[in-house]
Image (cartoon, rainbow, N blue to C red):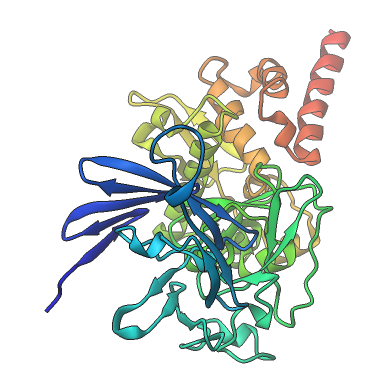
Length: 405
């Protein structure tokens, strides 16, 4: 017979269909009768709860029973030497202590839930093999944190993350590659936005939180395994091992004739523009597009704008390029079109700034009016050197032509 059924919805725990605890980055709120009581958690660099306290009388001082626990742990999470141990008398009990993972005590299991796997904190071993064990053949698939729980964590049970502290005091994680010899690359200037390789949804960034690099595609499950749902810095070595650049994807599917391939590209670029709008880089988003999405065309130019009765019709052109041209980086005629857009900053400026301006300044003859506006836009600094040079060169040609007149 089930006495207490616990349901989970993001950071909220329900017991017998009633909310009991709301967890957040500073601790949790506990339902105590008719009101919610805040409980605060102080954590160490690995996310282990070390101190739990509250301020029951609201006087700004923590005394007596308001100090609910001071927690120490053995290396793999078994607790010891706990002081002021009142946490186990507060209902509902906080079971998210070591690494912030839930401790399952049912049937005396006392195992930590890491999502993909469970760990026994007494043995320091996972109870199931690593689902990505083929990437780490040099070590047992039942290990936790590469057998170094002081430095490493495993947020999802699928990938180890190594902790280190940056110069500015903030936390940074990198994910070791197979062989565990990966080093942190702090000298990479460009940032590559990552999109779901199946749906085209925006997942996040790596290296930084900007859009001045190549668009990358990655399996959503792999991305979640790498990041553990946190804002972390992935080393380029790992991101490139798990993901694929959009330019390479196009090269491998260079005909792009199927409806599925074309729809995928539409989703990627539509989501890119919406994310740039959300982050305040541009003033344009898909709500201004006919049908709410970009369209796919086969012209020789990169993109085209056409007026529509229900919004802008902006076409992303994917004139095919040969594998030889792609591998040599030399594109004849207008075949550079899709490759320009594989750079996130260029795509944002072309699809989110330049093309929409054609509503005001239609026709190629008005590029001399559009380019200066693009150059002054909030997003122009994200562009590649190639695109910046192209815009500047177009302006120089126009100015020289006017002088001759």
